Amino acid sequence: MKHHRGFVCLLLLVALGQALGQSADRPNILLIVSEDNGPELGCYGDPYVQTPVLDQFAKKGVRFERAYVPQAGCSQSRAALLTGLYPHQNGQIGLATWKFRLYRENTPNLIRSLKQAGYRTGIIGKLHINPASAFPFDFKQIPSSNFSRKKLGDYARHAAEFMGQDDEPFFLSVNYPDPHRPFLRQVKGLPRKPLDAEDVKPLAYFGIDTPELCQQTADYYNCMNRLDTLIGDLLKALDRSGKRRDTLVIYMGDHGADLLRGKRTSYEGGVRIPLIMQWSGRAGFADSVRNELVTTLDLMPTILSAANAPLPGGLAGESLIPLLAGNAGGWRKYLFTEFHLHSAHNFYPQRTIRGERFKVIQNLQPDTVNPGYGFTINRFFAGLQGELEKSESIASAYSLMRRPPEFELYDLKNDPYEFKNLAGDTSVRYQFDLLKTKLAEWRKATDDPFLNPKNITRLQAEITASIRDGKPDKKHLSLNYWNYFFE
Image 1 (tube, rainbow, N blue to C red):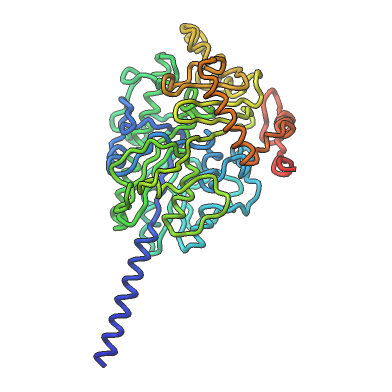
Image 2: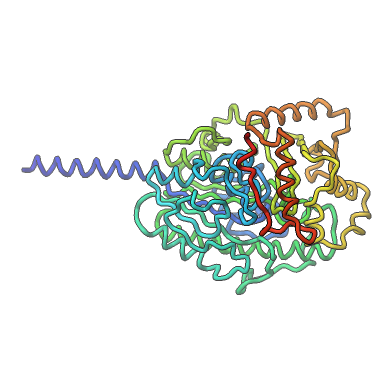
């Protein structure tokens, strides 16, 4: 009898050890996504913004200095994150609210893969991808964009509810509305000490400084401060759950700020984002800053690898786990982004490559007016023309943005804000030609549908057919690109 009891105890200990091992091998995953902000955080060196929570989070985690999204748009960035594919590969090339969608609902995605691996999956905040049914979350709360910032405390409250449900490993995506426009200076006392125009300078990549830009920048920073407080509440909820040490926590912005030369562009202000991770006890996930070129396409393979789940074939990114563990050999030398459109107002396809120092933007409808220029300037920055004319170099940069040539070349070491196009400079001809070659190879390797100019023409015609009273009308927009892009 004693031997029997001893054997039973041994079995229980083995089972407990296996359970603990499985828990350690299959971490919870908390993905925190903010909306419309670049790396304007204290930990990234911004001198004005107040983000103490994220600064401390970065200090104890790994911060990626050169992290990018594949396209500077909400739906496009989020779909790329959750499918591990570029927008031109998955079909979500424009906003879901403008009828753009995945080519196929059965495209493999992160949520399905995690559910198959035994994870509970939840989302708080908007998904913003068509069709939503392709992402079978177990738990859903606050599905709207919530740009009015109602009941902001509910994000942490719902997260606490989900995290405390049971002991199965979980994946939870929490998507905050800040700092998307409108830039609300203060919401229910947050931030506690809002900044004013005289407290800040405009972001450097604007190239200009006006009282109006200072005010917009200050209120953008106020949104960032409020976001920081809310993320602090969320991390406290994770701590109270007792699951912090078993959780891989990822924070990212979905693309750059909705300001000049940011969102809806291929400039650094649009595609470069903050990306910070923490994972207790894992090599490389603490007290470090990485300078490799990384993309949010790397997050799906990273998360699935962390979860010991199989990876679908054909993913565009690479797991960051080997890189952070010290295996940096063979990491990418080039990083690619793209643009198609946001809403139907601003169709202007671009393809981009950057290396260690130089960056090329290829405009697929060159020497035509980029409708995104007027869309941004007229909506948010009317009256700037006189200010632009005060500097010849800045005026030239904005003129090029409005009507770009086929190729733009920038030296990000000496010109990090992309004010001087070097495409005609013979002293950098070798670098220019090399990047153009690599870009063409990538477009072919990823089956870019816009290698066929007829696809650009057909999509443009569908958008043009929707125009009423001088602008696209969503009700009259009839899209069919998912059927003809790969004919």
